[in-house]
Image 1 (cartoon, one colour):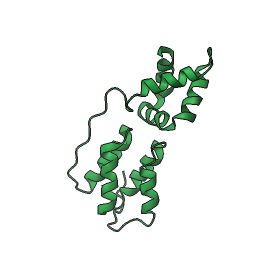
Image 2: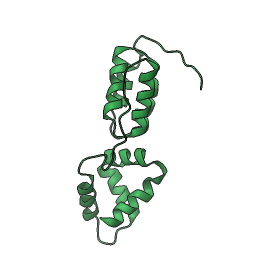
Image 3: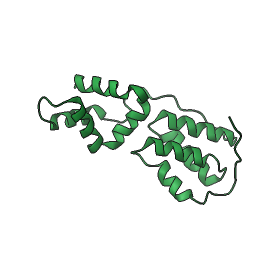
Image 4: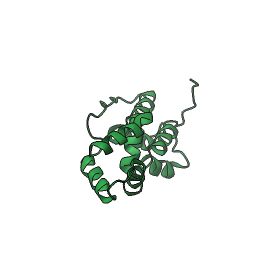
Amino acid sequence: MSIEEVKTELPPNYEALKVSANRTSNWRERLNAVEELGRWNNPKTIDVLKHRLNNDTVYQVQEAAYHKLKQFGEDVQLPARKKGDLIKGVTKILVRIKKSLPAGHSFEEFKEKLKKMRLDIYDAYEGERGSDFDKWLENVWTSL
């Protein structure tokens, strides 16, 4: 692992990074923003990193923010991995999406409709489940 130069001023693209760090429908963009913000030891970047640490739905993003803050010497704790639903009321939302599709619809149709209607849910669970996402979603779809 290479040692990167940490700067104390505000990054020139701070506002764009802040927007990316808070984009609820793209966990990869949030993760990239955390990595970039972690190169700038500044009160404003630290504030954004702490927000991601304490509020992100995807544990991988929380972990990245935690490691960056620790590198800056911040006194932070890594939150416990959430148990149960990442997003409150997700089962109800998934049932509604399934019921909105015609009888006999395929799993792929359900997956696409979820992605179109609730990208935030799709993205959070895809980020959290990783390569098991499709299998997990199909099991949920079958059980609804």
